Length: 300
Ligand code: NAP
Image 1 (cartoon, helix red, strand yellow):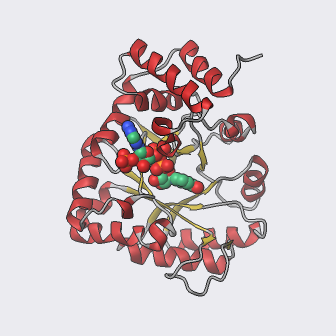
Image 2 (image 1 turned 180 degrees about the vertical axis):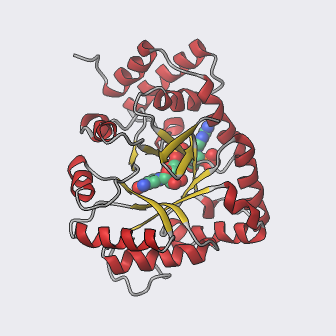
């Protein structure tokens, strides 16, 4: 599979797998190993995580699989995040949900992630959400230290607006390598707010979370989603795609900003389907037909 070189020393597979829902799948350690190996066979080598996934348990569940088969570590890229503090029985000291991008928290969170993953480095660390209390000089200090210690190779952000990316970049020695944002045919916010354009300005690839609307595209009775679903069915027939999810991935992959979809399914056949979507480029007219269905009107 084609890869995306996000920095000199880090590349990601064109399709990334997201582990947000791992703790819901009821997989044993061996089944997590099997799932990772099957992803690798498909060319999906990059795995997206966050400290908070599964109520602070997913990184460790994944790490236990890496412990069972340590040779997997050098075959994969680990992306993880920090900066959100959840109310959780696993973090009784959190009285409310809040953000923390202090140097101390970023470093402490990475140390914990390294322990959870049973590894000594993370490929890309993302700040999970923009923090109104962010001191960019502190974030920069944390990044510099983590890089110098070899604990994190590269840094990015998630859910950042254009101005927030520019602010943080202006303090960093090395530019951010990605902005992970919600992008799908039913979620156009970042086309409209210029977030994707800012990625193009910065020559970085956005990562797209919930590329299938978190699964709602298959089930929602909302008028907009129904409209989009109908057009997806039509484009599926026209392109010879096997399922509408392939058309949705194709819609993201066809965009010139090199969007990297993060597949959230725990079923390997659905990861395979996402990979097959690389063979299904959409025409410009099909792309706009899906856009039109989502907007509910033709372009001006
Ligand atoms: P998604 O692909 O939009 O949704 C995945 C959900 O759709 C799963 O529950 C899956 O169920 C279901 N699904 C997939 N194909 C289906 C089909 N053909 N029919 C019915 N249901 C289907 O992605 P997501 O999980 O919401 O997000 C992907 C990743 O993005 C996450 O794992 C996480 O890594 C990342 N993320 C990041 C942020 C952020 O703030 N940075 C926020 C949210 C997510 P099955 O498992 O049963 O297939």
